[in-house]
Length: 491
Image (cartoon, rainbow, N blue to C red):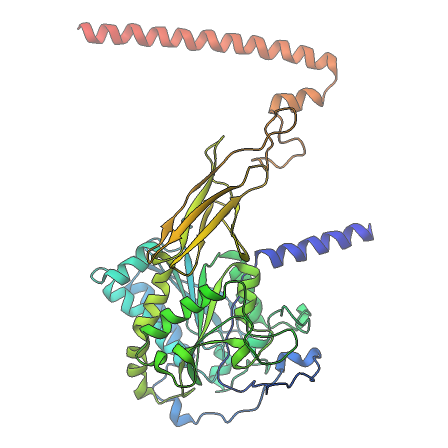
């Protein structure tokens, strides 16, 4: 029995990791590791790894920024004003019990569609509030312009955009980086290289809320907004040996492409003298561990960027309109890239014509994208200007490969998979609508095999007789209908 419990626990843990998605947020240089500094040790206190006590912004600087109550009211007012294309929901609560509010923007908010989903998260660090202000401005701009601006209309009609202005309302209220438990939320996620964040009892409620959120909603891409620099950061964020150098993930080209979309659409990010093109690999800038960015990509098929959108972490409120003006086009173009680029489509079965929740892989890239469980739609982000071999597969079906030349526009590739056959020529099924052991058998066959022969024969005779009576009744009704129709025509 103990072994069975252990196996069940292992399977549950594996399933949770399989369905969860990944995000990251950096926020200035408070976690900087000097090149070659690879001798520190990881302990259970690693949730505060590299954390430094920073000077709190003055109360004077907070003037002009929305308080947590102001933000909550503004979000509720927004969904009332723009109720046709939005809804408001909470993914959980902070340590001090403040709701973690999210606005969803779509022409069908709250519904599941065969469309990609994007999320923006702001204020991961309490002392970096610019993101929460810009995200509410983004929501209002889309609401005001979706019926007249082509880009806003494209987003509303083809993407489910989820906007969380503040992940760390407690940290914001005390003007500190960490949450109310003094934990850096961007060091609190499971890490691919080190296991210091595996204790679930120590995980913060804000972190758990994000992990559950990503399990419930399949996000194609996302971004977190930070302050303290001006650059678009992409995976990997850390290295295996804890040293500082460029460490590419399997989709490095795609991430560079997405980062450039943001950087080049920005007023001056791409002109950076510190970062070429205004983008950077996280590990080559300064490695971090336990971040959301890498975790999203590894566990959820979610391509996330960490966007440093202002050199000053807490600028004066009077500067916010200019910062919004500099970032507006970038924020919109990044969301729109989900439908303007990449390979998209659905997977179907040839025998039943039903959607198949299969897998999509690209030759030469060690990464798998999962199709949606209900609609079997997939959205594979890829860098344009290249030829790709895309393969779709599903258990019990023969995989199929197609070659795609991806230009500047998105490419649609639907797959129809043929069932595999056994050595006897029987079709093999990967799944069925029922959950019993013998769900591959017809219902009558299941029943007959589970009763003794005498009863089976008797029941079989009864069923045949009932079918005979039903057939006669149907034929008689059809004859009556024909007679009545003839009379109506002749009258």
